[in-house]
Amino acid sequence: MKHWYKLICRKEDLQLKGTLNGGQSFRWTKIDDEEKWIGIFNNKVWVLKQNENEILYMVYESEKSTNMQKGFESKNEVFNDMLIDYFQLNLNLKDYYKRWSEADPIFAKAAKQFYGIRILKQEVTENIFSFICSSNNNISRITSMVNKLATFYGEKICELDGETYYSFPDVEVLARGDVEAKLRANGFGYRSKYINESAKFIMQNGGNRWFDDLKKCDYIDAKTCLMKLNGVGAKVADCICLMSLGHLEALPVDTHVYQIASKFYMPQLSTRKTVTDKIYNDIGNHFRELYGPLAGWAHTILFCADLKKFQEDS
Image (cartoon, rainbow, N blue to C red; front, top):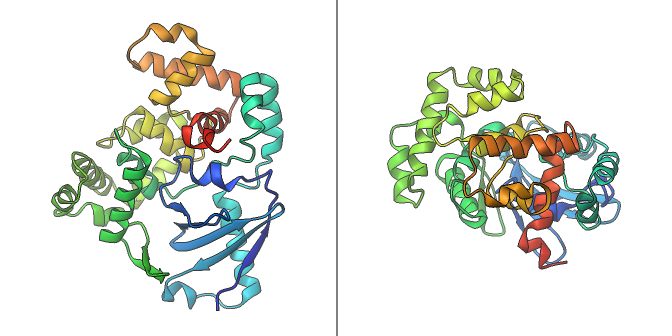
């Protein structure tokens, strides 16, 4: 029988809906009307539900992982540490909300409903290839593609309620010669080539060492390095910097973010028809000056507040 583990965490410090359903990760699904969520990270399947003061959760592992650790209490501590790291719960978000609200009345208004929005600290390989799939795409299709990558090339974690769950594949598997053709046959389109060629590039440049070097880079160098990958432009590189590499000043600018900027912050942009490199950087710099070193985090909250699917529930 599975146990419900417990992590003390107030709802005001972590809002699961806005965090898990706001386009950061494509591996989480709401599974009933009680705000219960199922998702995958750290090669484990997690079921989360929330009350005012706690996150209750179950964890499903592969047989190999299950046999490595014994005991309910020790597992609770290990799993709690994983959740704290994944949701970056050691960062006192209320202090930052206060600073951002004082700096920006538009943020202050959004913060009343969109409290507790966290930047997920995601595994970099999955993040890179998930956001390569995001090119000219919607969340539903991106989710489908990411799940296909895991099903085709990942390792089985477990079966649960008739569904089989898989880990995200290692980069060397995505670099195989037959990957592009299979992905094209399964609806990935031009992204098939991006995925396969990016994986090959990483393997040709050291594989795990390439990732290790990337994690040591500062923000600008990391972004430059990521943009050498096929299918990774400035916006995707900024997503990866923000959500996997700890560069919380990174601010991904897509059409949606451009509209927020031009409508509320930089009206001079309304006459521009395309987001040039200069405009992209100007928008990022505007919000970095406004919000400070965690500008990417602050703007993610505005992004969530502006998404129609959240507005419909308000």
